[in-house]
Length: 372
Image 1 (cartoon, helix red, strand yellow):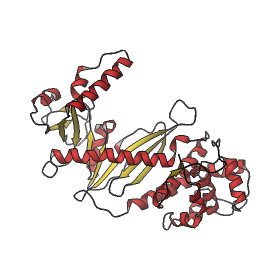
Image 2 (spheres, rainbow, N blue to C red):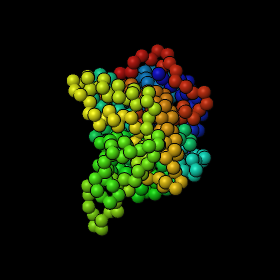
Image 3 (spheres, one colour):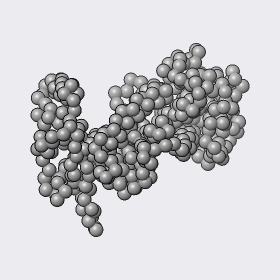
């Protein structure tokens, strides 16, 4: 799926949607993206070429032909490759400025809070058998827009510290983010979290530090929804000692059909590996387990569960954004060129979301599979 090629035919409209106050010429020179006037006359022309290459999925040769036909610039594809490689950090600055501007959009909040989700995606070169890049994305439910992006190499692990938090933020995250070292910094920033967890994701203790028997607590729960106060074992000591991380464990018993479907999935996965599933996993499959730092006085279990359901809504929106950006079709293998392609792709995707009527469409006429 591609972005409509016509988006770059209306350059004044695209230019008007770039970050307010962002000086293309000055920032390009500061970043070393544009140091001398030759085939490319100014930073704005360099940006148009980058967006055509990354945003429209053209090859380097097709981009040069497009630029010459439109009277934009005349240069060879090796020359364009060199210029785009140097422009990657600058294009990243433009993405960051676009995101920062979107984050300022005023909107209503759930009881005065800002709901956010952190998600990630792996990006591979065509034919590669392993991840090449990781894109970490923060999504704001109220504005229905991406409000933070970070591109890392394969060593960039998923963790909650990739988001920047403010007081009254609530971050919603799946079980991959349920790690003690990630949870405390959120609280230290004045924000809160609702994180899904598994029966063995964290070492849970009673509030007095004694071992906590999760399955005994689950068996004793009479209502469909309930909560327990637990302490998370952090495995670290400090001077002065850090106060214990005491949280609420919100528990919801699944409907029989939901529980059965999850148990069948576990059994199927175990059969594929030639193993027997852990009985504790089958028992835990009957429940939804959420850890939260939100106060019980203002956020009862029903509210915690309702808020977490928003995560699934955001995941659908994020999948739409990833589809629009076309991040699964990375053509370039040279690291600097790959970064330039990704940042250009994101710039066009963000602007396309802002422009009414822009939806994923067919590739430009005459453009085949890009080869870099």
